[in-house]
Picture 1 (cartoon, rainbow, N blue to C red):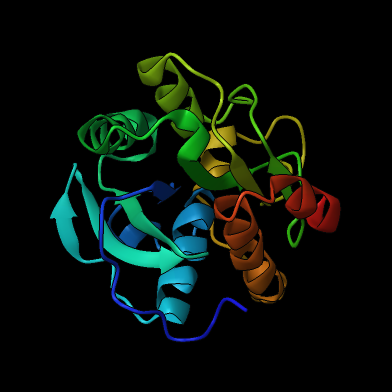
Picture 2: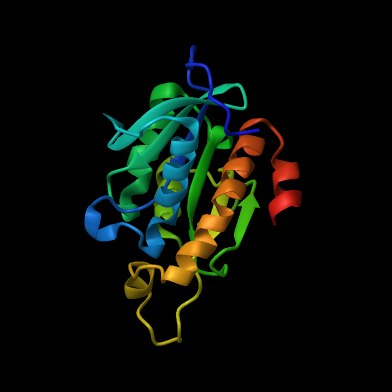
Amino acid sequence: MFFKSKPSPTGPIEYIIAGLGNPGRQYENTRHNAGFICIDYLADKLGVRINKLKFKSSTAVVKVAGKSCLLLKPSTFMNLSGQAVTQAMNFYKIPPERTVILFDDISLDVGRMRVRRKGSDGGQNGMKSIIYLSGSEMFPRVKIGIGKKPHPDYDLKDWVLSRFSDREKKEIEKILPDVCDAVELIVGGNIDEAMNRYN
C-alpha cells in the first residue's frame, strides 16, 4: 500500500517525519544512524531524494496516507536534533502529535521495532534534545533496535557509533518495510493499529 507512485504534494505541510542520525560519511551505517537508514529507505520507496537544505536539515516533501509530509534528516548531529525538528515544527505550525520521529534504541534487539504514541527520551540524546526544546513528550515514534552493549563496561558512545555487522544489516533490512508501513499507519491516524501490528 505504501510503494505506489504518489501524486506531487500540494497544499500545506500536515506532518513532519524525522529520522535521526549524524551527518557525514564516517557515520554511515552506524547504529546511531538507524533513523537515517529508515528515512532514506522511505524516501527511496516514495521516489524522492532528501536533498533540499532547510531547517538545518536535508528535506523532501512527499504524500503519505494522502497527507502532505516533510521528510527531515537533521544535519545538526544527534545531540542537537531538536534545533532542526523544532525549527520545522514552528515554521509549519505542526504540533508534536503530528511529528513522527524515527530513531535507534539500545533496549531493543537488532531487527526489532517498537511504535509508541508518546513518551520520555529513554536516554536517547536526539529525543532528549527534541523534548527539551519543544517542551513536549507527545511525539509519536518508531524505535529501531540496535542491540545492547556487548558488556556493561563497554563505552556507550563507542557502541552506538559502531557499525552493524553483515548479519545485523540483513536484520535491519528485513524490518525497513514494516517501519514504512508503521509510519503510514501513524500518519493515517491509525497508530493503535501500528502498535498492535508491530509491537
